[in-house]
Image (cartoon, rainbow, N blue to C red):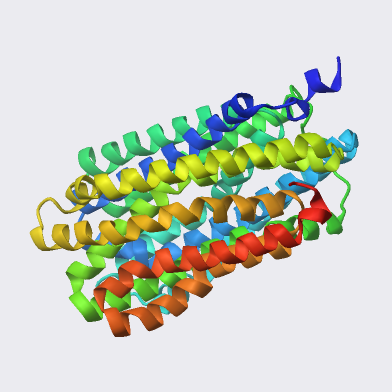
Length: 446
């Protein structure tokens, strides 16, 4: 069996085959975004607004878990894929096993620490006396499932590295369907309230974790479990490579808080509701960029590790061309479909609907720039340049948005809030172009 036959990452990709290879990851991320929004709609319509608010209160803890898992997954994927590209298959398997074990241990530690300091965490996140009981129920269950959450994030990335992106897609779809079904059963039929929402989400974490563990134990692919060497440098390298993903998740929690307090001052509760709709919509629409970047990053790492400069340049060129095309599509979809999206969330509140619709007409321009920024961050992660990746991610998701939110609303009021994300993405794009030019001779991707 030749290397190309054995390892799908060794294929000489053209535009169509590369998009086909990344397509399962794109659909997977889009589906995950869809069922996250559906989950929120279930809580808003069939429990109450206090429950929805409580989920937002404890969301930073979930962001931390997902951020740690994604950091380890994306950074570890780059390490493993590079060694596979170098032909060091046994070492790649050992590193892969160590990364998965580390993810499980981190998840268990989060469970233990979180439950021990549960009340302090909830009060520290700003829960009111009314919201505290909801927060306590939801966060307790989420912490119990923390290890499963970590593992499903790890596997979704590492399935791509193992050359099995379709399996990741199938499991994501199954998890999403299960989450929606159990939400309906627990929340609507059994009237379990916010507890039902948390359990349904937890079961959704378990499905890809259990099936993924069985798959990698069966040794059916080149990448599978083995006895790992306890090499701390592998974990440190994985974390440093993928730190931008952790930064992104942590930044999301902070910037959401800033958006909320700014809109509360300007338009009150209706303004907060409107910005919430746009934030969830942004999460859904950027999944296309994230999924494509996730699907193509192992190919970049492999060709970089195998020193196949010709294929590396070809891959990167195809990626940027595709990102440019999909950015225009997402921008037009958001601009033209903003009214319909607003109606889904705010059909019964005319004021929120109008605020949201007006926001989409400005906010949509961010999608023209964000795709290039997201892919470039993933590109540098794939090339084991965690510093450049983290810089792009940090300024895109936190630095420039924070400055924009502190400055623009003072002069432009609500319009300034809507402009904050487009401005942040535009400034990040300028930095991204600079970093791509600065490192092009080092990595030979252009």
